[in-house]
Image (cartoon, rainbow, N blue to C red; front, side, top):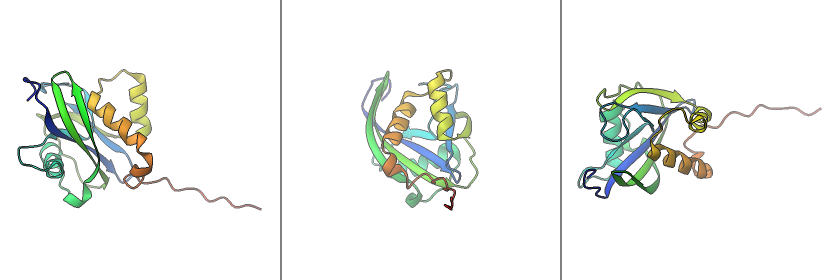
Length: 164
């Protein structure tokens, strides 16, 4: 699909921990497209006759060693992505309140870290790290859909103030 620049289906998943931090991964140096770029929690392809939702659950397990139920993986949006050899219709999912262990596949992932959304925005603004363009697009969409995303990201507790 990449060499022939064929339109194909993919998934993008944002995995948040219980503190609302987003797991981001640095792609392996062996990746054909965008090696060593920082990316969303995971991105992958949808297999023939596979539903995107099932692909997201499968890819979470294969790429990150994460086992979640289908109901924990919430679809947020679908968007087109065309960059270089990559031409995809991407279905974007979010998992919140993840408490388990992440065991990345070394062939897919060089390393991974949990970042606050503030750090993600800061890293994008600095422009010093290689950032996958699909991650940029997904993050932009996520931030635009702030009202819809509130159910996926824990809200900060508001401190109570008393008036005298």
